[in-house]
Image (cartoon, rainbow, N blue to C red; front, side):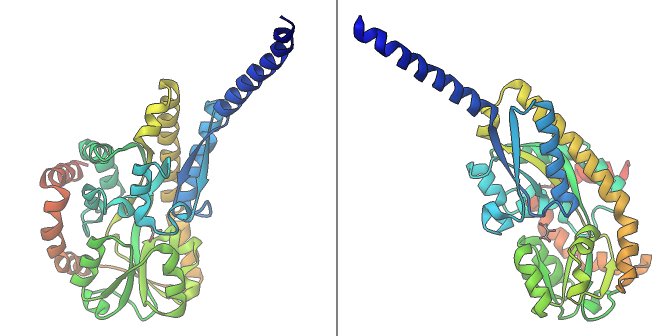
Length: 336
Ligand code: X2X
């Protein structure tokens, strides 16, 4: 009994400490979120907005910690999806381009000149085709929650104005590490070279490549014109949606309430970011022009020449994306 009375306070202390530790751990449940671009860009801001909303709605029970600049995959953005699937990363706000090597259905968005405008993008992501894309992601061990937008990708280069496929002849163009892009730029007569965003900026600076393609927000924030990219062609050849997603095993450990919070806040952050990105487009273009960039807009006829030149990319890639998905997306675009 004597010894028991001595142990009791110790046991009580240990039990108390255990409870404290448990509640501390529960309160501090932190999930990692990977992004390619930082919060200087709408993309990174989307992730930060998500984190902010989750913090607020969960009363601090869930914390999202954003890791920008592809740092969780050592700069190799095309490994982000695999890292999330394997659990190395809990969550991501990622680009359809970067995840397409693992989810071929995502190449839908990269089919050249398939999505004519923002209404088409919304009709696809918000409709049956978007649901099919989400199922394709889920079947690969990742739970998609919401859409965001990197934007329509425009073409820049340091050599001269581009208003017809022939102008791309032999130009070294940096493309993202997704095979479809290699095919698109090869079909246009360019000399595409795949590299990550981390490697792209030094390659543009040294002149190792002549051109690149990215949305206006990326061109503007990263000051791509300051590394000699003086010519910009607005050709809207593809739109790059973003997807908010969670590793499946992480998802399974969350309560129903936590899941609802994550999904609702992802949708809110996504809608906020899409609206902001689109609203900013015209002022970004004006800012880019003010800095001396020569902007080329295509006539209908010039646009058609690019569409025709990239037909072979559709022929090769539609079977990989899936004919049914492409047809469903096409119907949504026509009915928009
Ligand atoms: O690498 C790019 O070009 C970027 C930043 O737009 C993507 O991650 C797709």
